Amino acid sequence: MPETLVFPPFVAFTLGMVVYFIGARMTRKRAFLRDYNIPEPVSGGIFVALAIWAIYAVFNVEIDFDLSSRNTLLVIFFTTIGLNASFADLVRGGKPLALLLVLTVAFIVAQNVVALLGVSLFGLPAASSVLLGSASLIGGHGTAIAWAPDIAARGVDGALEIGVAAATLGLVLAALVGGPIAKFLIERRDLEPRDPDAEPVVGLSHKEQIREKIDY
Image (cartoon, rainbow, N blue to C red; front, side):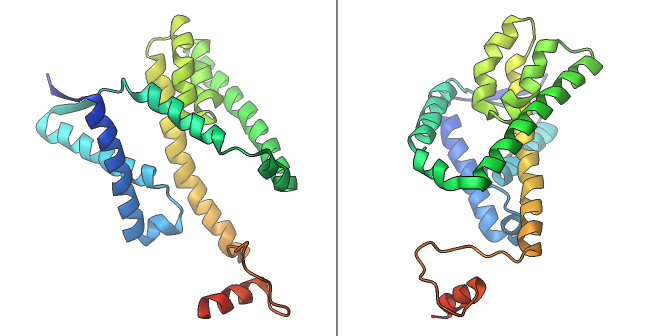
């Protein structure tokens, strides 16, 4: 039997921040991660996950984290997200935001349909499709954790682990796939970032204006 090393809540929280800083440093040092817009938590998380797997494979030691503080941190996180919301920003979003909303709703439906078909195909409880669909893939870890007790009450063993695993897999794949696609579209359409505080120069294209500002 492997030995289990459990980190208490404070240490687990501190290590979470360390993982983020590791990912931030990796992103700064590796052009590949910057060019393909791989988020710092994803790059740092993959690195640490491989390190934990190596420790288990070499030393036969399982590393576990006490996540009792997780719910409190999730409430803080979603509260700060809500405080940053602005109706004026939604109005300024205009047509692109409306298109994004339509696509999001379409993907929510598609995710739930695929999840339901998947659990039916593999003979899994129908209730588990909630955690394999939009609750985890759109809602993320917080929504998956919130739904897990209700799904577990319907007889689904390991509901919390299923939801967290689905949310993690969705986050990692979205970062690894979305970043390269975004880079391809930016380069294909020759897009440049816009500075909302910059004054336009008559007779110059947007790209030329940016170059003028950089040279200055």
